[in-house]
Length: 113
Image (cartoon, rainbow, N blue to C red; front, top):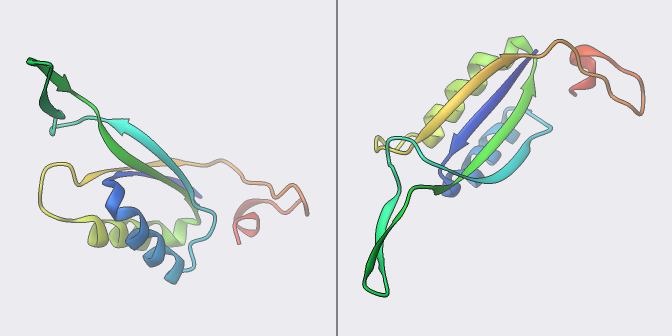
């Protein structure tokens, strides 16, 4: 099992959620976050003074997927989130040792479905 964390533009959340749902990827966690990368935010003038806003709104989507679905999930996120502009986001993949469904005691991939 792998944890896929995708940091994306907020307007990409719904298209990606729909695409992952169509792939039978369940159990998404979504967080509204602020962050910066190469975009480095923007500048505004407040009461005549220049103010730099270094953090931009982003959405963090987390999913734990079986090893057999990792590559297809990553490809789908890239396909849907791609605009070709700075700020499209990043995807991080990490190992998950185990998963347990508390209600039934199921472990591993069985706990994901």
